[in-house]
Each structure stands twice: as structure tokens, then as C-alpha cells.
Image 1 (cartoon, rainbow, N blue to C red):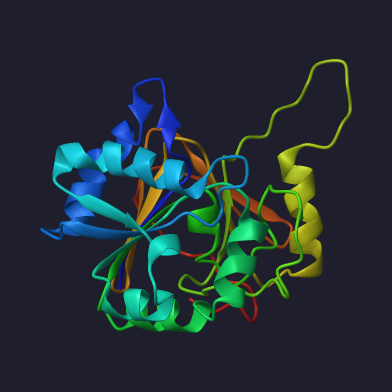
Image 2: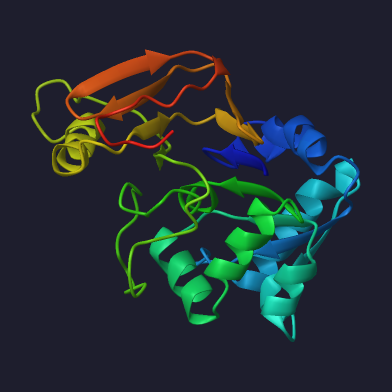
Length: 237
């Protein structure tokens, strides 16, 4: 299984520019990407697909939108490179579930028939559930279970801002609510500019910023390098 899971898509340098080398490496000569735009809510899916097409053109990857395929399940079954964009994770999961694509997509990726690039919601969806997304539940996705390609939860765009003079909840406090109720499930707080590369059984953290593991009542800051998933009493590696 070959996955590239980005925290975000945009930087001061442009759209996906910071990740182009990593995407090229992941694609490994594949030049046709099937783009999943379903997380887009305030942007038209055709426009979203065009934006990704323009961003990936410099590295020789063409992009077609899954929403324009006459048979989405057949498109997923034959894809060699699947790209899933960010937006609202609940909307993304709802669309995938309604079209019967969750199982086929996960099976295609696990079997190695396709490689995968995701950012933001597109990364969160690879977790066992979407319960650690930052998004509002603007739609009912019919359940929170997702692709389950990695054995931990993602929290993308991670930061733990404390506003001086105020006592509002921080991101760490919100994630603690998850880990109190699910102490065996690790959560990776992935800052913007960072990503996780999965290659078979190997997972590697890339980027300039320290990420943070949450497990039960423990937190651990980690730098770029091999990504070892922390273990609780019943957590799976």
C-alpha cells in the first residue's frame, strides 16, 4: 500500500507546490489521476478538479474528476492513482458511502492496484473513523467509519493556539475529549506543511514542524523521520 497523506494543500508558494516532489515520487511514473472532489462544498466540483489539474500538470499528471465518470465504481476499480482533496470531511464521507465506494476504494488501495494522495479531509478519510476531523457535521454521512487504511486517527491542520488573556478550548483539549473516551486509539496531530508517507509497513513523517501523538492521557512531540505508532493496551499497530 502506497499513500501520501498531506495536512494541507496551500502555502504562500501556491497550491500543492510544497508537495509536488513528494507527489511525483508517490506517482512513480503514473500519469493519470482520478480526483475525488466530494469534500468540496463552497467550490464547484468541476472548478475544483480544474484547480488540481493545473497544479499537477507541471509534474506530468493528468487529472479527471470522479464525479464525471459514468460508472464511479468501475473508475475506482481501474484507477492507478487516486487523489482526494480537502474540504468538509462529512460531505466527503457521505458521498463515498452513498455511491458505494468506501469498500472498493479501500480494497483497491490495500491490494496495491492504485496509489493514493490525500490532503486535509482526504487524509482524515484514511483513518478508522472521521471522529478527529476539525470540520462541522454539515451533513449526516450515515456513520463515521471511513477507509481505515492507517491504524490511527488524523487531526490535520494541527496547532494548539492559546489566545493570551482568554481561556477558550485549545485543540489539545478537544482531542483529549476523544482520547478520554477512546484511550486505545492514537491520534496524530499533523501541522500544516507536514505529511505522512506510507509504503507497505513503513510510515514516515515529513516536514519542518513537530507533529504530536495523543494516546490516552499521553502526548508526545515527534520530528520528521520514521513514524512509530504508539501503543495502548489494545491498540493495533
